[in-house]
Image (cartoon, rainbow, N blue to C red):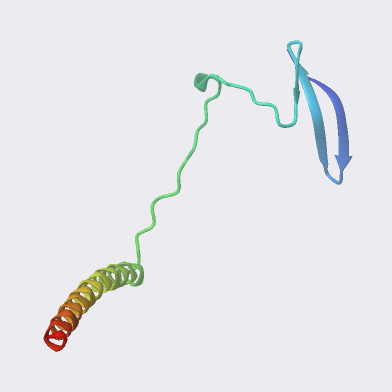
Length: 97
């Protein structure tokens, strides 16, 4: 059974449809329809995976190293700030007596 087009509009080389009737049901733009996964078969040929160039591999290593270094720096700075806070508290205790 062939679908029946209820209205269409030509724009340049394209035809735009606003609705289609199939087996007594009207489908409009924006409607949803469920298709059984076995309804269609597709033969898709994926392109072969390209090998990463050495430049891309180096970029990946650089990003990882910068990421790890930022954690190291943040950890170091948190220890420095913690020690600085302890020193300030200790000095406040000394001078408050």
